[in-house]
Length: 111
Length: 119
Image 1 (cartoon, rainbow over the protein chains, first blue to last red):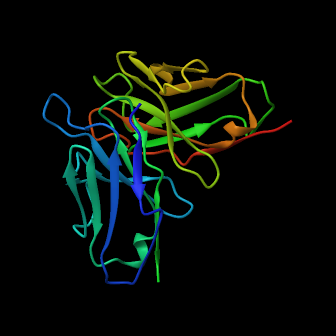
Image 2: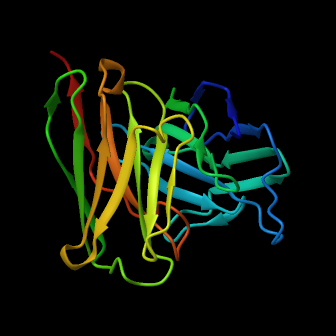
């Protein structure tokens, strides 16, 4: 199975600053159809997870453009620009090229 | 409006079989490539995908849990059912169902249901 490793485990960010989360997969997430199946989800405190980014860099409907995804192959990054109080929670990456696997999560708090 | 809602027991005993139901609305389980997944989250821990089923009855299971899981659907009643056998305290978790298929996976989630395994 594909293992997803996120770093850091914890991030404390001042409002207005940027934050980056890394996600590495144990195998390439590039499918033979040319798509890369890497997703990002945010689980706000006490809530179900919500989809932020799909296929590495496409923002889901309603997601602010402060959220951006990048990467290829096995290395991926989620960047949050101009962090706001509402961005707190745990961020998960997930691969979908072979079965489905989540990363361990990165908890983001506001200083 | 798309919604999913999980239901099932809040408490099960070790060795028992857990049966959870996900009732969906706002979309049909008969639409090609539409499906529902089950995902769980032990308290304070990460998400773990368990299984999914598509409209054509294609089923896929987590490698580590496939011997214990069975997923099925009742299209007319808009329900997806997950059974997990031989429950253990380590299976204590919030169990979520989420939509998968024609959109990016897990675009809609249920609220989750906490299942505790204890004697």
